[in-house]
Length: 327
Image 1 (tube, rainbow, N blue to C red):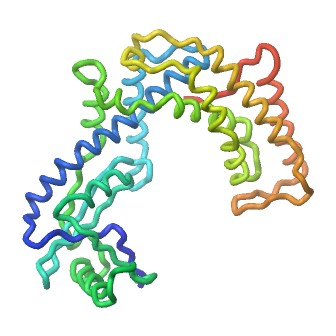
Image 2 (cartoon, rainbow, N blue to C red):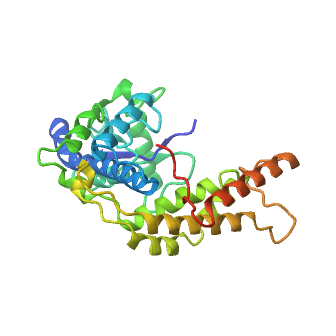
């Protein structure tokens, strides 16, 4: 049976497990706070930018709405799904009965957690797998010792909950996120420190507009490559037209920005992108990818008709600009 433990570590001899857990919390809590702040900051800025570009009223409090939307999404997401608690940190600790050493499994999607954990003084990498050769620098004897150690800590079916002590940094997102969203001084410093740059905001807006144009493409990989083509250059032109986001904007007391120039540039880019999307290929052979879908002649004609209709509605005098994703 294949064994893959890429997230395995071993603690220094004599490490007090309970004291170690306390140190892990002290290291990981600030990492978690910063990641959560980034989620809220990006969501609040998205609400502000989309409202300004649509000429609509901003949310009463973009930061509060960002929190409520994330909280609602978390309630809908099932535990174990990729949407649930994206900034989680969990670990399982088990003692090797032969050596007395403590082995650790880390479960965290964000590399910031894994990097912080691996940098702790008591921690050393202790991965093992049997579906490929061992890494360079590890002898066959050392690799076999790892295999035996993990087999002792995870016997039988190898379920961590059966033989290891589990630790979760947070039960869920709510308390930490709420503390960040409703800071006593208005806006938490971490929120302000993790706001997306104007360049990042410009790229998001451009991608949103281009994906709307290309949504009927039957070639997913080709569409993704096309959407990114020339995007950094256009984003560099768009970024200076965006206004900086302030604490007042996040709490709802800011003044909406004049987005006329931004809307105009996005409309021009969407129109140019649509023309490029409709250009005939250099040869008659279709480009196929693993995600390509075989369309009938009628389906292709209908897709082309929809693209032409969107192009006509987004270009020319008085154009309203590209459609942004609905909230």
